[in-house]
Length: 121
Image (spheres, helix red, strand yellow):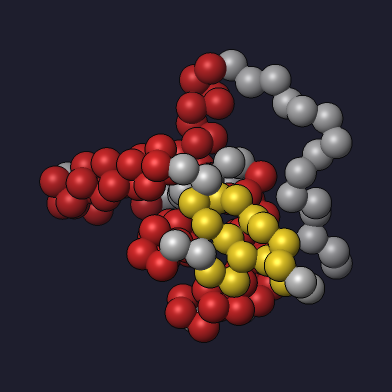
């Protein structure tokens, strides 16, 4: 069975609170956060370099890179037959830095939140 496309042809108009929530959903996957942090450390990286550093499969890396790129967190630049990725700007990393600080300061309570531990259906 084929995976659904990562984007739709028509832009979805969202209420401001839903749009804001989607910003956090974009980073709501540990692999996507690891990609953003790797790019912050290394500047530019190819998909193969990210796969090697983070232990992701090529297909999962591709999916995560597409999401991060489409949502504005990273930029892709074609180089020959491949691409290199970098953060789209300081705001992307600032958001991750602030979220990490918040998570560190609230680790015990976030880790024990029963609502977050539930599997979404």
